[in-house]
Image (cartoon, rainbow, N blue to C red; front, side):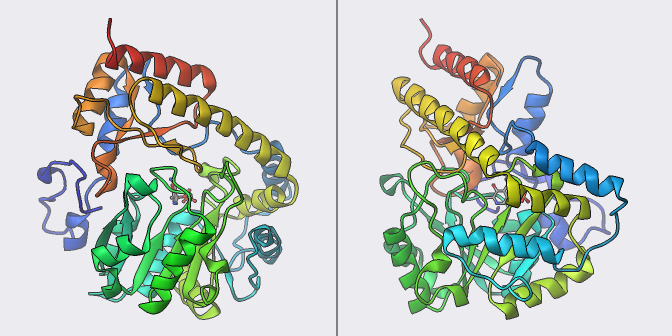
Length: 398
Ligand code: PMP
């Protein structure tokens, strides 16, 4: 992320002459400072992290244990176990996506690795990558690692942070070769309808943009079914879709994700992956097969719990005068700072010190984030209630 991390320069201008230019230029995550503050405090409630509070479904954990008991601890095929790729191909049919397990699916070490591989497979030094903002923090640095330049494309609250054709035009995105999409979105919780995606797809086709679509929150959509841009006419051949097990199946620590796309792009990603990662974690692959085959009920239960929390936090923020649009996906809401507080960073810092509640200032996520706060509702109801009560005493002290 280059814009608005709020970090001081001296933290990332390394002194050592052995450090590469790239290492020196890579900023620490803008979220980090808040976690460090949070770690120093007792009795702090963090609504800052993008991680489910649930454990992975027992059946998935049990499959992992069983694989260990049977001594299945060797590497897998570079692309991932074939039975897992088949299970992924079956699973994504629920989104009308159809991919060949042999050539069009790559199992990666988290969706994170897949994002990095896609940037390296698609971006040449000097290429421009259009990144709608506010955005998840990994896209900017992975574009830079590939030698590309980020073109921020601000999205707007008036469209509930869905990307529009005119946002792309206004930002000059026709100059880009790659467009990143992330819906349901981190950090805003925004989703995009088929009609909204159709406009973006039209722009991509007209200007020959390749789309990198991070759909890791596809299963966490509360109003309607998830729509992938790759299902729209002429898009499968110009889109890489990412998904994974971290969010929907609460498997963040298992580090497993996947990429779906045209054979030549997935093949190129696999060539890079075979040197840098070799294969994704084997134990996690066994857990993932089970998750896909038998954990739909557990997934639905987690989604219902998230939905209840979502409704609760949205109504509480609106009651507090912190305007909060109805985010329909992922597990984030993106309320505005209350009147009198223009600066989200100052608000978040004072809230930590005064009330011991950690939220992430919106500016960390780039353009369009200022004046907002990212709130993760991936915490239990009692914690959410206490956090909201504390925020209430902070914004309306009697
Ligand atoms: N994409 C988005 C939008 C995310 O929010 C995250 C996790 N915070 C990731 C990718 C990374 O997921 P994984 O754990 O699969 O690497």
